[in-house]
Image (cartoon, rainbow, N blue to C red; front, side, top):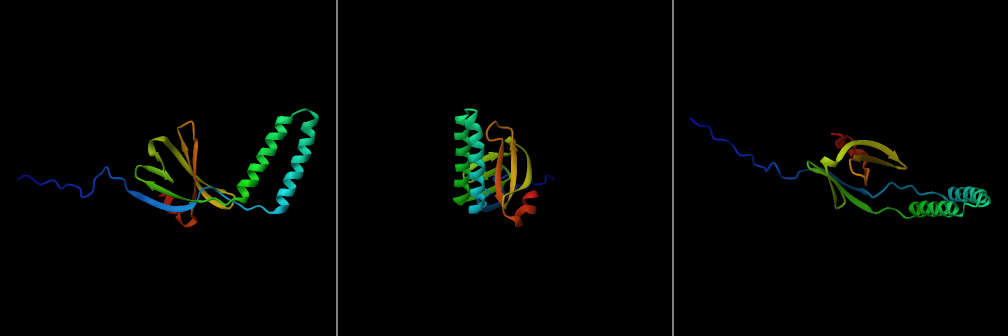
Amino acid sequence: MEEEKKQPETDLNEEKTLIEWEAAERSFKKRNRDFWITAVAILILVSVIFIFIKEFFLVIALGSLLFLGYVLSTVPPGLAKYKITNRGIYFGEQFYPWEILERFWFKNSMDSEMVHFGTFMKFPRVISMVILLEDKEKIKE
C-alpha cells in the first residue's frame, strides 16, 4: 500500500518576512549651541596652527567636516522601512541577501540602538539599521 505524500501548503521558495519595522534612516542627536561654539573655537585654533605650516587644504577639509557634522545634527533623518526575511535584509528598497552578510552585532550610536551587518562586499562593508528597543530580542532570534 502506497502512502500519499503530502505537499507542503506553502512554497519553500516563498519569501517570508520574519520582522519588519519603521525607524529613522540614521542615528541622530540634536546638538546645542554651546557644543557648536566649542567645536568652531577648536577648529579655529587648529586652523591657525595648520596655516603656519601651510596646510591650507587640510584646513578646508576640517572646515568641511565641521559643516557636514552641523548639517547632519540639525536636519532630522527621515523614516525608513526595514525588513528581515528568510532570504536577506531590506534597507528601504535595497535588498542584501544572506550570502553576502557575514556577521551582525548591536551597538548604541548617539541616542539610537542599532544593528550592524558586516558584509563580504568592498562597499558597503557594514550595513547599519536603527532598531526599536522593544524589537532587539526578536531581531536576535
